[in-house]
Image (cartoon, rainbow, N blue to C red; front, side, top):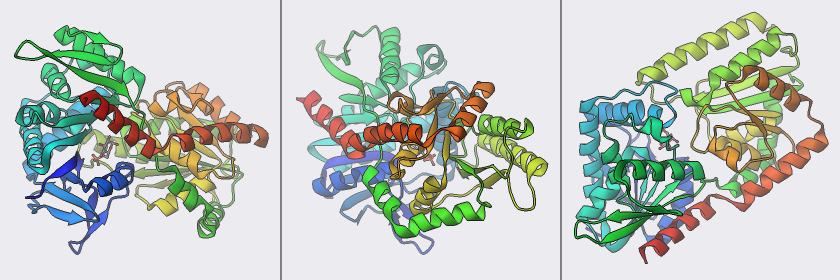
Amino acid sequence: MSQADFVVVANRLPVDRDDDGGWRRSPGGLVTALEPVMRKAEGAWVGWAGKPGLDLEPFDFEGTHLVPITLSAEEIQNYYEGFSNDTIWPLYHDVIAAPRYRRVWWDAYVDVNRRFAEASADAAAEGATVWVQDYQLQLVPAMLRSMRPDLTIGYFHHIPFPAYGLFSQLPWRRQVLEGLLGADVVGFQRVADAGNFARAVRRQFHYTTKASGITVPLEDGSTRNALAKAFPISIDAESYIELAQRPEIQARAKEIRESLGNPKTVMLGVDRLDYTKGIRHRLKAFGELLQDGKLSVEDATLVQVASPSRERVEAYIQLRDEIELTVGRINGDFDTMDHTAIRYLHQAFPREEMVALYLAADVMLVTALRDGMNLVAKEYVASRIDNRGVLLLSEFAGAADELGSAIRINPHDIGGMKDAIMRAIEMPGAEQGRRMRSLRRRVLEHDVSDWSKSFLEALATAKR
Ligand code: G6P
């Protein structure tokens, strides 16, 4: 089998399977980000094809060698829905939902992580660089290092890393830290995440940390250095600008506003349907503004795109019921024949439609209770080539560290959020322009290729 000098390991492959069995590149940001790197390096990508029991041979797709990992229905339940998304996800998002600690889930997580590590070890050439992605694969770095000490191993953590007081709930906290410390560079979204990780390592193992470096003792009595540092992820800003400039997408934006009855203000929320996103808090604030008479449905409509996600995990099933009940109540109380309070869409849309929505929205609501980064905030900003529109941004999203010119909100403070929404709606054009220009400068100057470049440079330096 051919081996690659650059290997990406992620829970999901960068392709989706059509109904007719063909493959299409997934629309995600990571895939777009790494596409040029993969092509240049003739890289390999190890990941799951997203369906139970699908057993496929490795194949080439648009310049990337894809190595599919098979997961049985039971492994999907225990490793993906269970440990990844019902233990780690809620724990790392500050226990917004209660994490469940189940030993069978942990066992499956260990087994599946080992399978990913073995496949990566097979796919990597002598001295190759392997880049492991995200919380589903925290044990892979150390497993891979013990199988293949010649490799340079990076890990990027796309979600928050919690404070030690929460992290220490995890019955397998030592194993997880050991797993991550197998990487030469452990990358995080925010400086605070890297700090939480370093603190956890100090508390658990009493290792020395200096600046971003962690001294990891080895069995032979020597040490190695692991770097734990922030590399905030971004988007392919140019591609959003290009879409926003297209006349047909601008026309579509107008059409969307018209179909909503041309309200003065269109507000927009775009999220995976996830309890970390603060969708309920947002609906509560908007519903109260209608109730108070501060807004009417002729003046303001909220478009809420909530794309389906992890639909077999109990907390997500419950959340969907709650949100749909609330939307139904608000619309029932306030809709007229011509206007709706909330246009709720439990669907995913192609990027073209998303950019049209961004262009149609006067106010973008990002009200996450906790979020690693939140790329929707950056997508909105990149799409606003007219320098108009207002971004409301939760201080609990990683993006808040970079996007200082947004209106910051604390989504737990419903009163404060209502005031912020009114301020956004009433913001004069000049102030919108000033803020949006500054937001755009940041997003355009730091796009996703800068992100991958700076991570991979740090990784190359660390190994040397
Ligand atoms: C977050 C995670 C990703 C994950 C994505 C979609 O952004 O950081 O690792 O791929 O959500 O979730 P899913 O469970 O559908 O892969």
